[in-house]
Image 1 (cartoon, one colour):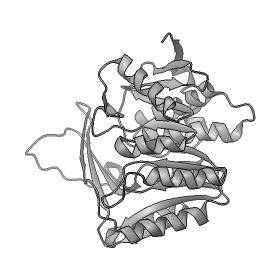
Image 2 (cartoon, helix red, strand yellow):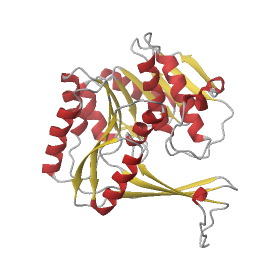
Image 3 (spheres, one colour):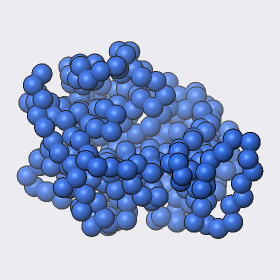
Length: 317
């Protein structure tokens, strides 16, 4: 089994228009131009794992209100085991407007919903019980209101006590505290600000310094997004840069989740793990999603053809 954790999920709505113009009404008449998804980091990866043939995949987190019921029905259509704690607050909504000519991407995100202390306590109990059969735990995304920033640290400690492999994608104080629990793989998530571990990210040296700092604080391996590239920090101290070639980004939604899925899929499928090869597969999957209107991975053949559009170079640091 694979367990993914999504503490702050959302209903994602995408609108595809010819041109995104201010103060102009536009009408969507067919399903091709309007897509509604159950969203949230971790959940999208769970759906990807199912598409790649994994039998038992569960998603743990909070959902809320009447929209939360709609959200769970969408999740269950993907044959995901939905393991949710319900809140009274309504789940978030995210709206994306994607223009074709010129290519534009406009996003409006609800921030979060409210979670009570007793609901957090229930999540901890549920998590401890439900991961017994899991080979890997993927924790990803932001933390909702009412949940302390040490939540990932607590969950990682529980997972590590049971001998589980942990992949963490987090940001801010939640990331900083979680590093103390020594997750196996870390990728920072800094969509809402330009800092990692309170350090401003301006040039490549800043990103490299942040990656090394995360390893010093407990992460075994680190992958840091650097514009459209990734900086890769292996366990032996080597640093690499993964770069795509000749890309045309149409869609950001789901790209990082595709990366995480393909990376872990490679780790599950090979006896001789190679960190760089795992990242090539992750980068290929992310590039496939970014260049298509699809949010989820469909099969390995789609992104395997993207390998030759990626390069990895070792950096002298």
